[in-house]
Length: 191
Image 1 (tube, rainbow, N blue to C red):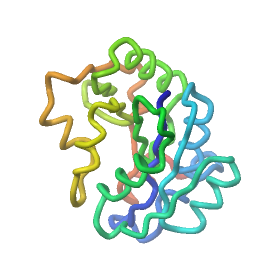
Image 2: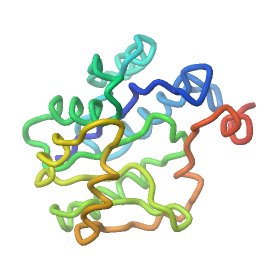
Image 3: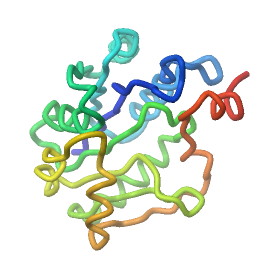
């Protein structure tokens, strides 16, 4: 079983507002990611949040919402909370960012299928030749993930374990697009 962990407790420091609540085609970014995760073959989904508005969206969709009181410690705190809140039978963790609105459930299923073939690998999608999210980490790396510190996530582990990575090319590069700045949103998503 793979647990989907949606990291949604950041500060959106490069924007003047909470980017996860920005709408694309009338649906908040984080809700689009939740819908994608729920429509895939993921059996459990956990959302790590900081703001009540994000929690309400998670609860509306019936997924587990875990408050992150350590958000100021950086992304590693959200990663750890997600793992600690996962089902004990999880043999892998797929980490989503909350601002990737064009991700498709079939892409998630493709990543899961690749992970099922070799459950000790890190499965990373390639969009237009660039590594992106969501990445799947095996249970065997749980302790390494729990040792992360500061504002870093799984990328630190990926960079140090090239021999354990399985890259999966995703045909539609737009699926890897995320929003980091107001300019990104205006350029790509604003109606």
